[in-house]
Amino acid sequence: LPSSHHHHVALVSSPGMGHIIPILQLAKRLLTHQKINIRKATLFTVSFNSSSSSSKAEKDLLQSAIDDQSLSIDIIHLPPIHISNHNDVTIETKIAITMHEAPKLFATAISNMEFKPTMIITDYFLSQTLPLVKNMMKVPMYLFVPTNAWVVALGFHTPKLDKEVEGEYQSHGDSPILIPGCKAVHPSDLFQMMEDRTHRLYHEYLLMCEALPLADGIFVNTLEELEPKTFEALRSGKITKVPIFPIGPVIRETNNNNKQNNRINDVVNWLDKQEEESVIYVSLGSGYSMSYEQIKEMALGLEQSGKKFVWSLRPPSTKAGNNDHYLTAGEDAETNKKGHSSAQEETLTPESKNGETNSVTKSQESSDYFPEEFYRIQRNGIVLMDWAPQLEILSHPSIGGFVSHCGWNSIMESVSCGVPIICWPLFAEQMMNASMLEDEEEVGIAIRLNVSMSTKNVASEEIGKAMMKIMDKGDIEGCAIRKRVKKLKHIAEKAWSHDHGSSYFALSRIIDSNGAS
Ligand code: UDP
Image (cartoon, rainbow, N blue to C red):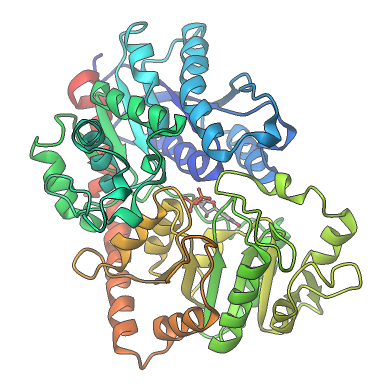
């Protein structure tokens, strides 16, 4: 294709806000890139045959892209993936079914399009699209990775590991998993898809990894400076020949000018009244619901630290004293609300108290809903039920730390805002992310909490201490962490500058690198 050709790019996202937010942002950046002629983007989304599979936040986000007159973005919802007995299927099986079914639905949809795409970008986890489309259309095919390059290196290396390693990867004591030229992966940090080799999820993951070499290029939502060693290894040709480009941070723009949005206004007004870098932001992701016990430890940790806070929270996944039921990342808040009465939900909505502060109030209906410790700390902060304007919060000068589950989007947002991280990794590749962030030789912008493997809980004393370390000015280690994250913030700012930005330039390779030129 000549580079003067006006391109139509078709993109497909995996389900979940952690995938949809960055790929939609990528579509916007392609359409507004001055060095490439992309006239139109069509984003395909994936859903299930259950009413709860797309949240209000997701619908609002997609609608705002359609409403944006300055961009030509179409959204097409692929036919829902049918899952029988939805409630009995584990999240791991659901992800496996998605990895298998979504590529077929996407391939059929693009083959039926009238205005055929001239290039295709698929979410990394839907890489099984590549062999299907390769046989059908002669267009360049790229992958977009909403996580880091280290995970990509592991993906390329997995088929080899699969042949060489006997039994479960984690059954070899403390021996690390080696990837040529890269930081080794500690067995307890292993990517969740590789945890059980007998599970269908591992089988689909392996198929996904085997398809990776078919990509014409891979765009990763990371910064070269975060992962210099991994990029060197990836470019050495020892792991793959596929060109891999860092294009991060691909994050949402802030929406501070949207005066219509009360939620943003309330939280920003409150933050405006706080001292610089004095408030901690707490969020364990877009889909995860903390258990009653986790909420209790977090509240106690906040109390012990004495820090003010903004907390993005969903209704607890368990009741007092019951630790059985945990929802994992990817399940949304709607699923979780089942069984909680709407009266409770209303009571738990933050209320504005004379414009002074927002708090969750304890009432008769809600008294056993959250732990006592949670109600005790309310005057010290804001709790935002269901969905927080995360970027507007992180970019506020009053924020001095972020307790995060280490989803990669959250990390890129925190880095872009220069906010140090307290890592509470839970699932997926989050343990790898946390180990990269805390490692001083690699990145060194975070403190990692000691998370129980079975309950995913952390002791309150540890949480409180980490908050003080990261935010109190006198702490030497905390100081070094803050300094490093501020340095990365400047690097991240430059990466997307339209003059010499490394990520801005790397994205233009989509037109003039190999397959697309
Ligand atoms: N997010 C948000 N408000 C919330 C929770 C999450 O805006 O209350 C956004 C967050 O800014 C990020 C995404 O949702 O862009 C979550 O992606 P991430 O990779 O951090 O974690 P995931 O939710 O996929 O586990």
